[in-house]
Length: 266
Length: 193
Image (cartoon, rainbow over all chains, first blue to last red; front, side, top):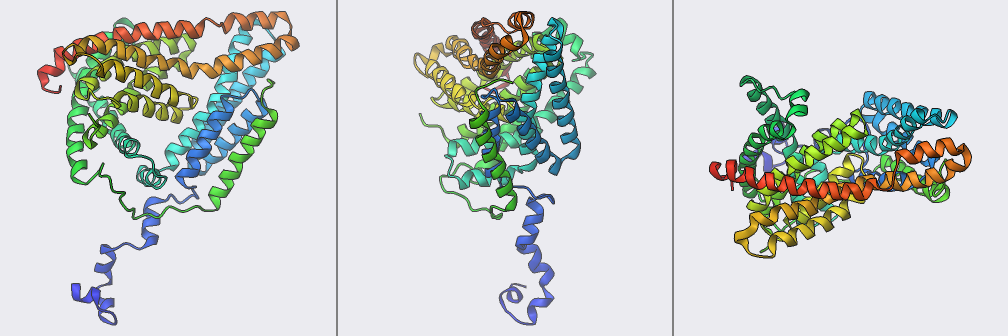
């Protein structure tokens, strides 16, 4: 078999199937790592995430907030249309409440209006963050973080965190089941009556099981060379596409908008 | 003592736990602003358990700095202001100094103080609200008249921020004590320390 793969000519065609399982083509890797929708490079997404965050939450411009919500909703629509609709309706409700408070300045409406105003702003940052979480695959993110030469003490914990979240959720579910089995129902009522005791009952077993599986993860990761000083190569080549240009221009637009309209409310 | 690859993986595990617990309890905040502060408070106290165990397992300079900073990165992913990252790094470093300077035998006594310093960062996500509301208030007071301005001022008061700093510090002390107690009661026996 090895003879066939090293030789050229007719012998190669017989073993194509075997050869393919050994070394996937760039096309296979693309379909494995990239979603069908055009998704920008993780580096572009992260930069725009920080731009939205720093402009919308630090500027008083309304038009900027509306534009950012629009951008976040459009981006979210490319990966999860239903989430985009949810974000849009939350932002619209918030805006409606804020406008209602301006139209009829009753104390109750003002109170609700301010909450609506802030709901709309945080929708912009949160919706884009959700987009980033959906669009960036953990393995591609790690490759991108290494590419921008982030130090080891950032890359290794971030790699582990994305690996741990599903474990934490699974173990928390298991602990809750075990509590229910013993007649301790961890429902909102028990949290209201004994918040700390209920939390302790939930967190102590959760910590124990997560840390035990974490110790196993540590052993496995060290064997595979995680945390070695050398930079590992990646089978997936990161590259910028037209999607990056679009998203990058949108981010630049937000900065311009923040500079020109910032500092004034309303 | 330098952080080894094993310590860095440990930082990842504990940061994930730390963030998940605060996040789950902050979700109660959808019920309203008061519920948000109560949820934050419970989350802070319970996270003391996570931090106490983390400090006992990794008592090295830089461990809490990284936990604070990376927790800030995760908070950006939940829509909070980017200022949480520098705040997390600074408070984490101060907490690190409290943990690593001094007699290692008396470490359990210093853990509550270190944790209290670390959780003061929870005031930072409130900063943009305070900042923007000020500007919002000034212009709307001219446009909307006194009624609106009075109602608004009653809602967003300046003492909320310093009050939360003190409250979170006290909650951090309580959480740290709870963490040390729980560590002794459960984790030392289970051989996890």
